[in-house]
Length: 93
Image (tube, rainbow, N blue to C red; front, side, top):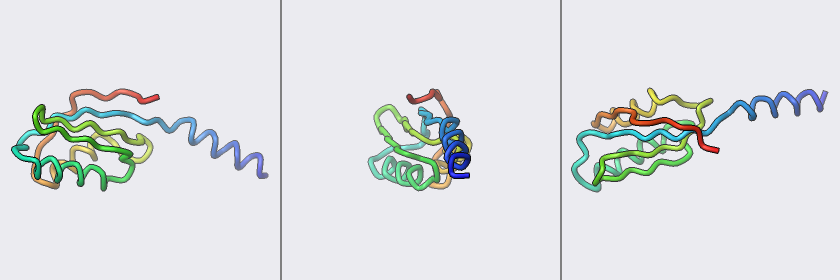
């Protein structure tokens, strides 16, 4: 039974993939804007890390795709008053 349970857990984790989303964030004008977006993204379940850069208005988010989706990332940005558009999503190894 223990072997079966271990195998089941191993299979689940082998299908979990980390992904990186690069999001264009519209409306950011100051460092407080980036802080609000970063905080909201980091509080989204499944987000591993978030980096927000003002000068090119992007957010780079590493997330577990079994726990969150790009749509939820965009919603986290909208909650704090900004809009976002997915520029790119790629797998992280």
